Length: 97
Image (cartoon, rainbow, N blue to C red):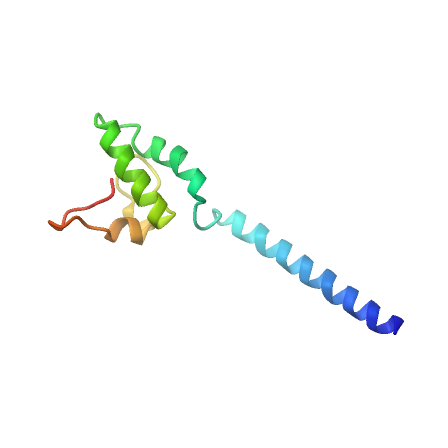
């Protein structure tokens, strides 16, 4: 009985260790997808260089909340975020700034 408890405890600790390592690796890579609460700060930076801040923020936030991704920089780099890059207007133009 005690041997079974030790084995289960060892399994649990090993699993906990592997999950912790996985989270550290993901954080080192850039964290993957954004959390919805991060959209405001990411879009504020994305739209910081434009003279059309209100429409840029509106569409950036809409795209971020759908895609959970905002390309780096203030312009371009959309290939780093395929959902953001591929969402188009009815006319076929880019939806996301």
